[in-house]
Each structure stands twice: as C-alpha cells, then as structure tokens.
Image (cartoon, rainbow, N blue to C red; front, side, top):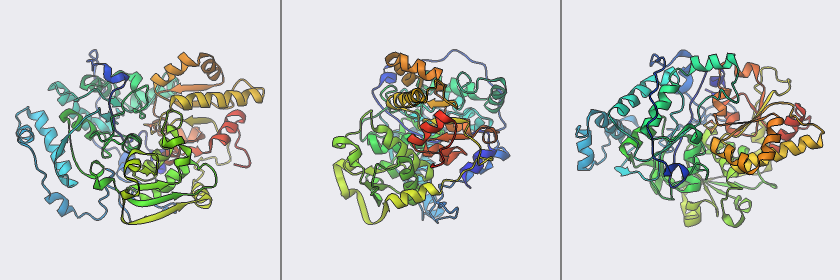
Length: 522
Ligand code: F3S
C-alpha cells in the first residue's frame, strides 16, 4: 500500500534507526529520571486504522503503482528469494557465556531478550553474535497504544535493572506542544493519541538515554555526538540514521525495527548478518549520476530507492560536490537528503559514493558484485522521477499553508542557511513576516547553538514566523485530520514519501514561503 494513503488514515507512525561514540552526550552519565506516573495503557492490539503498517511500498512498488517483484526484508539484508523453511532451519553458534544467558544465568528477563535475539539472528542466517561498540540509537519514540506490548516488555526489563551498554540517543518525539501544536485542540488529540508517551520517556531515562534536548534522528551531528568510528558494530534503528551511519560514518548496523534496537542495547550484542558483513556491504548496482547541474538530491535518492529497493548501490558522479572527497558540516546535508530518500522510497540501508564515502574510498569499484546492474540518472530521468510526485492535497489548486523543512533533522548549517535565505528574501520583498509558518525541525542542541552564535538572525527568523522544533515532522503530518487542514510544502523527499506534503526545490520553496503562492513555473 502507498504509505501516503496509510498516513492519511492513521494517527501516527514510526520510522527507523542507529548510532555512536565520543560526543557531548556520551560524556554524561545516564541518570535515572524522577518517578513519573503511568499513562493510560493501550490494548496491545493493532487498531484498525494502523493495520496497513504491515504493508509498504518498500516492497518494490514502482512509480506506476505496480509491484516490481522485489521484496524487502527492511533489515537492509536483501533476502528476496529466501525460503521460510531454510531461514527457520539455521542455527548460529553461541559462546558458552551467551548460552548461559539464554539458559537464565542472568535472570529471566535477559534470557527472554536473548531468546528473541537468537531467533532474529537465525532467521537472517547470522553466523554469530558480535559485541557492540559506540552507542545505540533507538527509534522507539512513539507512545501510542499500539506500542503497548513492547513498552510493557521494556518496563519489565527496567524493573529487573537492565540498562543499555552505553548512553544512547533516541528519535525526536512525535509532537511538540510548545512550538507547533500549541493549541487546545491539537493538545487533546496528542494526549489521547499518545497515552504511553510519558511511560516510554521514563523507560528511556532509566535505560540510559540523555535528556529530551538530545532527541533527534540526526544523532550523528556534532552537537549530539553519536558518531561511532568506522567499522564499529552497532545496533541502530531509524532508517535515515542507519543509512547515514553505514554509508557516511562507515559503521556496521542492520536496519533494526523499533524495540530490536533496545533489545540489542541491553544485551550489548547483535547477530552478525547483512550490512554488518563484508559481503553484505557489496553493491549490486552501479548508479551513474550524470545530471548537467547539481542534482536534486531528494529526487536522486528517490530514484535509487525505487530502483534498488534494498540492494546496495555504488554511486558515481557525485564526488565533485564534496571538495577533496571530504564530507564536512557544510555539505553532509546533501548525503542526508539523498540517503534518507533511498531509505524511504526503498529500504536502502547502505550506499557507497565513489571518492567520498569511507568504504568506497578504501575499496573503490571492488565493492561492485559480479554481474552488477547499471542505472543512469541523467536530466531526463531526474525529471521523470519528479514528474511522478503526485499532488495529494484534497484541494489541489489551493495555496500552501505551511512549510516543513528538516526531515531528517536540520544541521546547524541548514538552520543558518534557511534563516538567511528566508529573511533576505523577505527584506527584498519589503516584508518582515513569511506568508506561511515555517517549521524548522532540528535538535534543541542545534537550535541552542544557533541562538548563541546567531542571536540576531534567530530573532529575525522568529519574527518572520519561522519556528524551530525538535519534533518529528512526519509524525506531525501523520496526525489525524492533518492532510484535510494543512497544505504543506517541503524540500524533504522523505517527508513527501510519507505524507501528503508536496516537494519543491529550495529556490522555489523560498518563493512560496515569501508569497504564500506556488509560482506558475514550478
Ligand atoms: Fe526524522 Fe521523523 Fe523524518 S524521525 S527522518 S523527522 S520521519
């Protein structure tokens, strides 16, 4: 099913994840939070409106809406032709210590976690469990009723004294009642829709997550500091973080689902398969980007995701946008935009960029598997992909009502860039206020840095109607009734993929923000 349709009928959704090392948050010890009262508990059953969570266009649904025949496992380990019987028959080797945990030496809760982990590893043909390093990143961020069974299990683990092996980061919360949904109607919907949020946040505090100012899907930013060293085995969740971590940081994680991240964090171990292995990191696709100008990074990512589904692509033609092959604070957002699109239009958990990303720099085209396929993205193909993005607004010719920038979360560079772009365009037009509210999704730590270093600009942005928020923008777009009342515009291909929000390149988006209208040429 098209996820946009699902979002329209669902009140909330989750996305995917990962993690790492020495950063500001790691210097902090995980402190237990003050006691909190428990929220209302859910039924544990998947409600009718969320039943389509079991379907996804990551299952190779082409731009024409028809199946391409390729099935994703969502772990990042392509198992397109695996037979269930084969998967069930595999048994990985455990060490004596691991077997003892499984047999209950460290208590029944840890034994249960080990049982789940071993079954998970066996299903995907893992050879063994490996010790994790760096730090975890979790995408258990939604305290909705349908997550209650997982939340209950985590609560039991917390009560048994289990903790993550390292201080970890967590995805942004699904709402922000301070800056975005600061009205009674939305607040009521939130408190009714996320009755387990406080319970979940309390669990994170006790398992080892830092305070809510560190919540973000871009855990690898300097201001957050979860960026493990290349080659580190970690167990991240959040599709965009996993994709960035594997590709840009060079860490080794599969695409874990919500909950599996924390099971592995509490055991400090992960089954080694798929993207954690040398073989699983090899590319089945050579993608040649041959656009005449700088590509539309979101469109290129969408094209790759749709084509490769869950296979690893080796991408050429992009090194000229990274001076000296270096990924820096000023250009990492380009890979963040492209990668998150590959991970949401498809289920890509790792890509290589020739001359830029660490594995590609080390091994070059040796990463290409024998018999690899080639996909060329030129101006025509890029335009074709953009042409498949439908206008899903109920009132198709209406004017936009809000701009959504920062999925995955904005970097410091992006916040300042957007502040300047919008306020300078407003100055030019003789205005002080944008025609529509602009939501800049970014971790509080990035916002705080921007206030400290660019206080004057940030004040001007605030007066112009630009709101910094550390929530997840797609969760906001998933709120019941959102698509009927908000005609959103974005520069995030991931947001477009999951919602009714329309996608525009940066220069058009600025014009829309200033005028409140979509230029005729767009
Ligand atoms: Fe982040 Fe939410 Fe987008 S977690 S990547 S803002 S879907």
